[in-house]
Image (cartoon, rainbow, N blue to C red; front, side, top):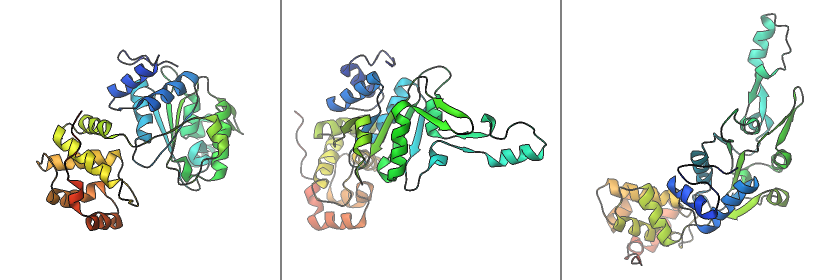
Length: 296
């Protein structure tokens, strides 16, 4: 699969990086490389990293770029086949029987397709869907083993109807915040990438791209402050999403830089736990507003 969008063909790592940037995602070389390989080799892509570094956004951007439908499966403890793959519409089956229907009640017309099955069936025409399996670390071991089986040959069996197999594999992005380790078997099936927080200059560029109302000076001040927050041993360090939100919030207040008063007033935009806010205030808000590094 080599999607072509607005002149970006996905034929090289550089063209993938350019296409992602065209759709408002500034990927570093490592991430652009693994996305290129996942698409070229038709392998699932497992992205791990702290919350807020942009893992989920990768799938969303790939869907916008390729034009494939985004199918999101949000994982949680206890997720099962009925929520992930399919279930039967028992209400319709019952109505069918009461109306004297003679056809088989376990027919496709009564099948409710969930994200995994929809991804395997794909689109009748056009690009394959993008399947986002979000926060796989929240699911239990049994579901992870089932997922591995599905991704091994891109097929799933519905006992009453037979096996559904993908004619063209979907683009698969699996994310994990690493609240537990994903099993080695699933990692072997996937291409793997640990998504880091961006370096300072790239975070400034991301803020300028995603919150254009923030001035260059404000973007640099906010990115520098967030970089310092991440070094304060907080329970929940801010991610890139919080950096963007903070810059947009300060800009909405008509401010072009940070000072102690605006940091105090808007701290909840970037630090979302009371204990973390207390720690930041104890260490001193002034530590967040020292001049950011000058642009090279």
